[in-house]
Amino acid sequence: MDSRWQKSSYCSEGASCVHVATTTETIHLTESSDPSESILTATPAAFHALLTTLKKETHA
Picture 1 (cartoon, helix red, strand yellow):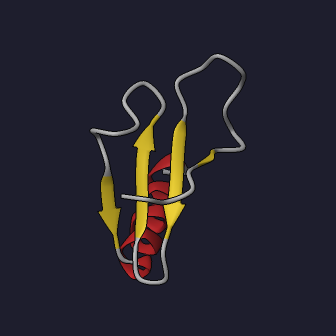
Picture 2 (tube, one colour):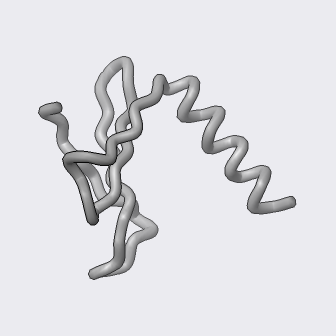
């Protein structure tokens, strides 16, 4: 995959971080400890549903 990865703004220096790359049809997530192997790919709608669910769970 030839995408530009962006590090999460919630990461501190030296910590394991989530990286995000997007195309017009997909969103890709990976972690800094293994950026080329552990890639989760989702549509924007599925990613939005994931974030919505995670936000609900953290406030429950």
